[in-house]
Image 1 (cartoon, rainbow, N blue to C red):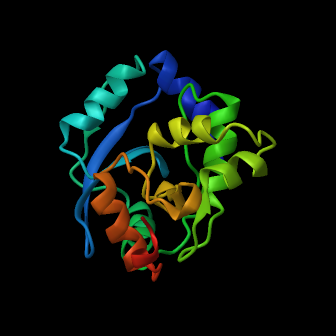
Image 2 (tube, rainbow, N blue to C red):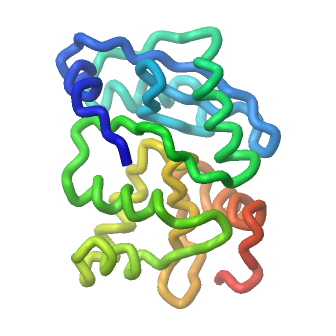
Length: 185
């Protein structure tokens, strides 16, 4: 995972300019993306106000509407959403703890069409008793379609929650990747 600390620091101090745009995807329609240059910081299926609320919650300057995101960023987002391809580009975090970064890094590595449990992620990052904390970290994932937290399920193959559209969206994303969602409770 590439994490551009310099951009995150610039955002936190008001030196960098966060932009946002809407990208139309085949599978999900409009997806909002907030970025600096080619580094995404936030992705959501929510209304445009969600981008501003996210920035406000981090006490960073509000993003500026951009009529069109950079082509390479649009293509990468569409590849991840429409075809389940792994996003390999840079991602930016603002004020994420080392634990959350570890959770997001491990989650980002889950291949398309596969799932892991919260407990497996906890074990993979060296905190085998932190399954609930993993769930909390994923609930705050600022890049849910690029860091595929929908691929993380509960123990016993429980579907679990999905912060960017609820359990039905999670089921839809997994089914689109070929996961047997009927086996999930």
